[in-house]
Length: 222
Image 1 (cartoon, rainbow, N blue to C red):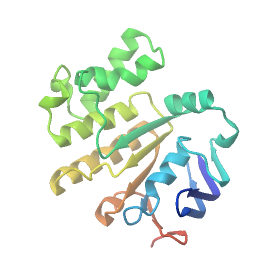
Image 2 (tube, rainbow, N blue to C red; image 1 turned 45 degrees about the vertical axis):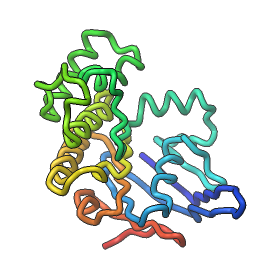
Image 3 (tube, rainbow, N blue to C red; image 1 turned 120 degrees about the horizontal axis):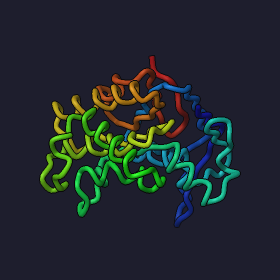
C-alpha cells in the first residue's frame, strides 16, 4: 500500500534544520501503524510528505506502486481526494456547515450523486453514533463529537489510506480512548490502512505496529 524509502527532509533558514534522515517505512493494505516521537521530531512532516503536501529532498514515496514524486500538483490533489482521508488534532471542521454537510463534503467534491452521497453520509454518521446530530452545527458539539465527525468525514469516501495527526491531543483521557477505539474499528470495517502520529504510548498501543521516530532514524518497537 505504502512504501517510504530513504526519505530526507530539511528546511532552509538562518540555520539549516534537518528533520528526517533516511526514513524507511512499509505499510501493507489494511494495516494500522503508529509513529511515535517527541514534539517537533518530524511526525507531521512525514505525514505531509506521504500526503504529497510537501516533497522530500531525497528518497521516494510510493502509494499503490506509484511514485508520488512524479505527480504534478493536480494529480496529487486528485490522489488525496480519492485515496486519502485525514484526521487532525484541531478537527478542521467547517463551522458554517452542519454535521451532515461536513461529512458529505468529500463526496460532493468527487461529484457523487446526491442520492448516493446522502445515503453514504447517513451510513457513516450512524457508524460514528452521530446520526441524531446530523443537522446540528459544529459549535453545538463537544470535542469528542467533533473528532467523531472528523473520522466520519475522513472515511466517507472510502479512502485506501487514512493519516491521523495527534487526533486525541485536545481530548480528555476517557474521550481519547473512545475516539481511538472508534477510529480503529472504522478503519477495519472500511478496509483502510492507517497511520497514527502520536506522542502517546497508550494511543500507539491501539495500532498493529509501533515505530519510534528520532532525530537519527525510525525503528519498530517491540
